[in-house]
Length: 66
Image (cartoon, rainbow, N blue to C red; front, side, top):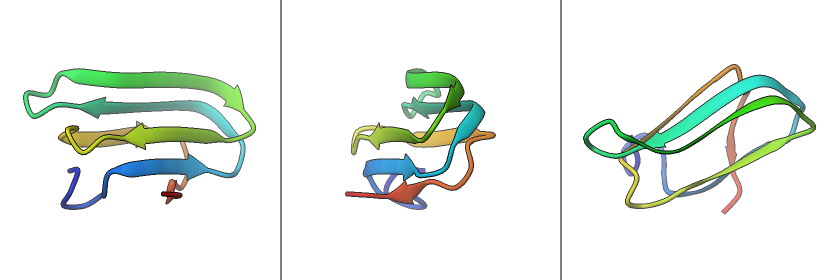
């Protein structure tokens, strides 16, 4: 949950990703933003302070970059 287990900001994966899915959602569970990345050399997502939560599958380790 944003603000409790993860802070708002930019998350980045510096390794290659394959079949990665991520989503940001509001307090009602509605998807605000999402993406499916079939293959890429890296990945970045912005978490807004108004987002309630963020989840990802098969993406690897996200690191906060600011």
